[in-house]
Image (cartoon, rainbow, N blue to C red; front, side, top):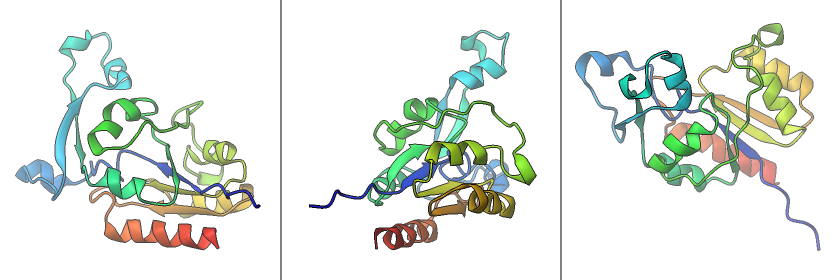
Length: 186
């Protein structure tokens, strides 16, 4: 009997794919993206950025989240992993709102340290974390530099999928993720 293959990992960023923060019209017109609701929270790093203010005086951060994303993500044939600066805060403030279980977290050694050859700062740490395991990464910061870095340094299949930070994950993005995972299962 052959062992069941491990599904690829789906590395999830929060701001951009799940929280379409870059929609300027929303701010001006008080427009609400379809399916999204506003949530206010105080992640630890948000509070730290406002030091020396005491926590009770820090205004909460507003994020837009779509509760349909949780079921859509868990229905995909991936192991879901947080790949976000929210780190463990994503399990506290994001996952429960959209219906995700507690997920593993990629813990960043150093935030925003420029990546080699123009690559996103997350990319070298993602490649080190994956250690050749197939993965798909959804983020609003992905560029051709990242594609080249992963192709040169990752020994397994990888899909780097850019998500519009003004729109968040949409049906076409989920279709790309499903199709790529199906190819990996063959």
